[in-house]
Image (cartoon, rainbow over all chains, first blue to last red; front, side):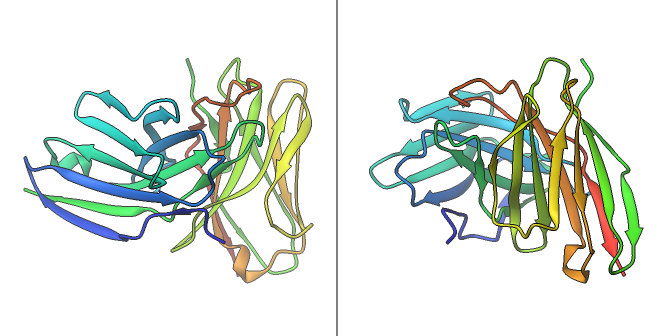
Amino acid sequence: DQQVKQNSPSLSVQEGRISILNCDYTNSMFDYFLWYKKYPAEGPTFLISISSIKDKNEDGRFTVFLNKSAKHLSLHIVPSQPGDSAVYFCAASAAGTYKYIFGTGTRLKVLA
Amino acid sequence: KAGVTQTPRYLIKTRGQQVTLSCSPISGHRSVSWYQQTPGQGLQFLFEYFSETQRNKGNFPGRFSGRQFSNSRSEMNVSTLELGDSALYLCASSLGTRSLQETQYFGPGTRLLVL
């Protein structure tokens, strides 16, 4: 049972436009969410996180939105740059489980 | 501050053999988690260690085992390798606080190929 789902395996966006990556989860006990970026042959790199007590967190070009009632989070990248082309993973954890559940990833391609 | 390091980076083994992978966490981090990444499957959680104790494990067979040493370094062992074990194995470290509302930092991974 996939508790964290990224239903779009790929996304293409023009340079300078907004990229929106989506993630859905099923476990209402999840209280901490993270986004990672991964280039081929490298480990995932942390981008941004959000606690369930918030509905938005912003860091530079990256903003994460959390809709707890819909069990949905999204990552907005504005403006998108060619260097943002990578696979993006969302992850979630529940307090006390010492375990992060990852989605299957979305491959973002930013076209110059 | 040095990041998470994993050795070896690449490994080729044959079916039936066993393999040991090593992970050194970021200095001061006491929690180490292991993940398996295969195409289309994302990152699958293997297990998490804190202060030499396994606190949680994923749904992998007993052929997959791990341990953590007093300096927080961790090893993962896979016995009786199968072709399906070919994957990128990632190690991640974090402070390991009680709430675990914290960020995990990943190493570069070990690419294992089983022939």
